[in-house]
Length: 325
Image (cartoon, rainbow, N blue to C red; front, top):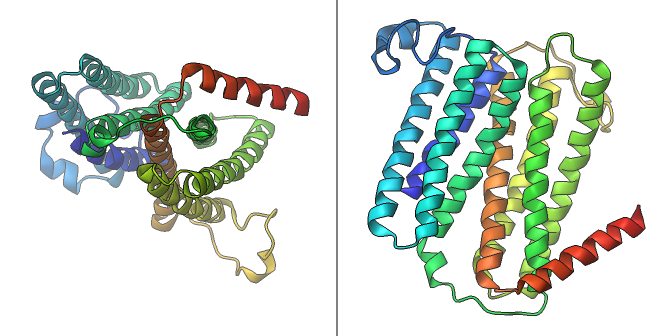
């Protein structure tokens, strides 16, 4: 059931990203109803044969309802089959989170506020990371791992936590770029773009360092090694998608070489190609968050580093950053 929650949440992020890309968030002006109909009773003929904006927005609501039902089922299954009280609490938190996300989406429609759209867009990947955590905690691999204390494990854990945190911060900046209010400041947009690009390469550097550390120094942490390798490949794809998304929206990035070799083309706003590439870039960002969350959790499962050891690692890192500044 936890895996099902992950597998239904990720397509929901895809569809939600498509709603923003196609600017279809206000295709249905009321909530929780759809043009006066109960959400589940809206005529399927009008939904399927209607405008694409309506199809995407109503589909997003239906898929969100499915995720909510799966979250309810997960709470029931955990209550019946899992003796860990904290696991039940975590599953209830996930249910509350998906309800809150639905309310945020509805408030965004009713009030038509860009700020609510940004919060809604940031909360979705966080919820996806939570669903990944639930799947990890209920997996057979998690139960089979016997924690041990190994020298240097605290560095791996700190690097994993920092990588997941940076991946999420990158999404926060991306949400700002996606939801620009009417009359927004061009200078603020440019600054956000610069930070977005900078963080992209910083995340890539962290993922590469995490993969190198896991494969070189931690042969026992099998899940960490393979998930970090997968994260490296996904980040490479994500950077390519980022360049493609910018190219389809604004043209070839001027800060990259090879502009003279790229043939110019007419940019069609909200075209199929543009919507597909941009939405894939958004969804892959959430996938990176989910994968790095799994890596961080497994790093703590394999190695039972003492809190004092981890605190020492954080203090040393903070001291180094302070000296650098």
